[in-house]
Each structure stands twice: as structure tokens, then as C-alpha cells.
Amino acid sequence: MSAETQEYINGMRPGPLTREIPECMRDKYTLVQSIMDIVVFVIVGIGKIIQAIYRTISGVPKRDLKGNIALVTGGGGGLGSLIALRLSRLGCTIVLWDINKQGLEDTVKLVKGIGGKCYGYVVDLAKKEDIYRVARQVDQEVGRVTLLVNNAGVVSGRYLLDTPDHLIQRTFDVNVLAHFWTVKAFLPSMIENNDGHIVTIASMAGYVGVAKLVDYCSSKAAACGFDESLKLELESKGIKGVRTSLVCPFFIRSTGMFDDVNSRFLPQLSSNDVADRVILAIRTNEPFTVIPGYLRVLLAFKWLVPWSVVSDLIRMIVPDAMPVHAPPAAAPAPPTPEPALLTKLDSRPMTLTPPARHDRQV
Ligand SMILES: NC(=O)c1ccc[n+]([C@@H]2O[C@H](COP(=O)([O-])OP(=O)(O)OC[C@H]3O[C@@H](n4cnc5c(N)ncnc54)[C@H](O)[C@@H]3O)[C@@H](O)[C@H]2O)c1
Image 1 (cartoon, rainbow, N blue to C red):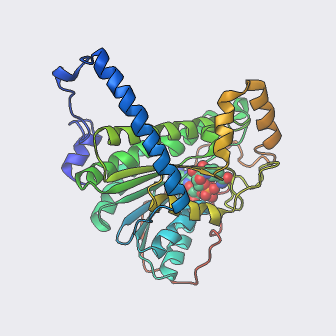
Image 2: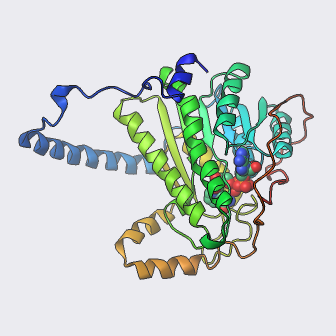
Image 3: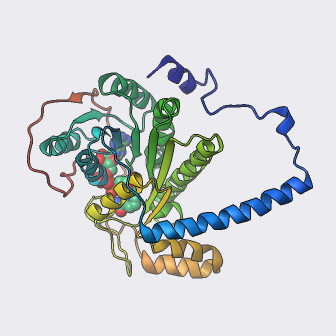
């Protein structure tokens, strides 16, 4: 990480996005100009909608990801390991960050087993200093990260008043604040090289509240806001080479996070299908992905009908988000072991089921 990047992080110098609005442009919009802007906006907007419909029907060309250095947080298990395997198959060098050392070793072996290059780092994403320190280490030992997948997540799964403060804190630390720190660490070099992609794995829970998931839903809503605002910052500054993708899946089977969820009418998603969809979103530079896609209609429906209908619908679809009380109200986790670069691990045949979980109790 360059000295300049370090200075942006410390707030000692304005970042590469900062450019003052010239005085002559402040509050100088005339009525005619405003009308013209609206007319142009409507015409261009209709054109873009027609283009999007055409591209949906005809298909969007897929980007070649070969040569990218892809960092996947939470890559030591669940969805993260499946995304890492696919990115490796497409020619990316993989960097995995996870708090779960055993899970990391398993995924590193899997990626190496299919002939990929993979580096695993033990990082506690709830610790800002850990993130910045290991980001510097990755920069020196592996190279410039060009694809950042902020995937790690945790869930407490209790009614708000039963959730200990430290679990609420941890949910926000991992599910959203870590995105700020990883992006601050890697975005400056992406902007300097006009080349990069930041993927936020949020959730449908970022747009729809669910009982027993108050901290989780709020953290995911923050992650959605993070992606959208960052996207706008980059677009308003004309930075075309750095893209962001927001991915909002419904409940996924077999990763462990929501295995016990009681969901009716809408089937839980296959983790392999979700990983495939994430890769498609990356390769087609999709700004916003809901999985399954038809749930977009429900999102619009939410703002059109009275709250009591929305409430009935959510409670009908998800009668209980956490029927089995997974995490004990334990004290905060013990200190993280020293970060280590995991090297030279045996290969074994590729499997597309996630490696065994070792962090079920959080
Ligand atoms: N599973 C679902 O139903 C579902 C649905 C929608 C969105 N999501 C989101 O998808 C992402 C992946 O979920 P998953 O189902 O694979 O979950 P998972 O629990 O299987 O995997 C999460 C990974 O994050 C790691 N992690 C947790 N805390 C960490 C920390 N402090 N530092 C570093 N790593 C940490 C875990 O060790 C684990 O490997 C999450 O952001 C989750 O919120 C999941």
C-alpha cells in the first residue's frame, strides 16, 4: 500500500475522489437550464431503459477476469469459498480473508486442487487495525487487489432485547464497517489505475425487515446504502474503470448461516446457484442483483401497499428466521491468533460443496 493510500486512510490528505466544485457552478442553475436538464434526463432515461431491455433479451457480453487478484472476505467457508473456486477457475489469483483458520486451509487446498493460486490470511474483520495491516501485507506479498468481494457476514438471530450488546456490535463491525475499511484500503489504487471492482454481498434482508434479525437487517441495509452511495461517488467523478456490484440473495441452504430458517412459499436457494449468479454479476458488471430475480417485484410491492399487508406477507413467508437458537450469549471471542500466510498445502479434487464449518457457534 502506497504512502499516499496510508494518508487517505488516516484522513491526512483528500482522497482521489475529492475535487472542489468551482465557485461558478454553485447554485447557478437557471429555470431554462433546469427544464432542459429534465427533458434530457427523460429522453436519455427512456433510451437507457430500452437498451437495458434489449441487453436482457440479447445477453450481455461477459468480462474476462483472467489476471485479476481477487480478495474474498469470509472465503474460509460458505458462499465465499464457492465464489473463490469459481474466480480461480476463471484465472484469478485468490486471496482469502477469514477468521476461521481451518476453513481457510480447507479452501486454499480446494483452490490449489484445481490448479489455482491461492493465499489465505487469518483476519478478524471486526478489527480495523487487522484489516489495514493485512491489506498492506497482501499488497507486498501478492500484489494489487483488483477485485474485492466483501462477503463475510455474521448473524445473531435473537429478538433485539435478547441480543447482547457485543453481538450487535460485532454484526455491524463485520457486516458493514469492515466494508468501509477494506474499500478505504484498496479503492485508492483501483482509482489510480482506473481498474477495479468492488462487490458487496448484502441480502434481501437489507430491504426487508425480519423479526429476530433486527441487527442483521439493519447492518445489511447499511451495506446496501454503502454500495449505492459509493457507486454514485465514483460515477459522479467520471471514474469508469472502477465498478461496484450489490448482491442481495434470499435465504441460502447449506452454508450454515440460515440453515434452520423457517421459510414458506419461497424455497431456500442453492449455494452453488447463488455463487454462479454472483460470478455472472461480476462478469457483466451488473450494478444490482437480487437473487432470485423475481423478488424485485416484491421490493416494488413493498412501497405500494399498506404496511399491514407487507407485515402479513413477510410473516407468512418467514414465520421464524431462527427457530433453532444457534448462537449462545457467550462472551466476546478470544483474541485472534497471529495472522499467517498459509502455504504449500496438499491438493485434493475440487468439490463444489462448501468446506466443513468450524465457526458455527459465534
Ligand atoms: N446464508 C444465507 O441465507 C444468506 C442470505 C443472504 C445473504 N447472505 C450473506 O452472504 C454472505 C456469506 O454468507 P454465508 O451463508 O456463506 O455465511 P457463512 O457463515 O457460511 O460464511 C461467512 C464467513 O465469514 C467468516 N467470518 C465471520 N466473522 C468473521 C470475522 N470477524 N472476520 C473474518 N471472517 C469472518 C466466517 O468464518 C465464514 O467463513 C454473508 O454476508 C451473508 O450475510 C447469506
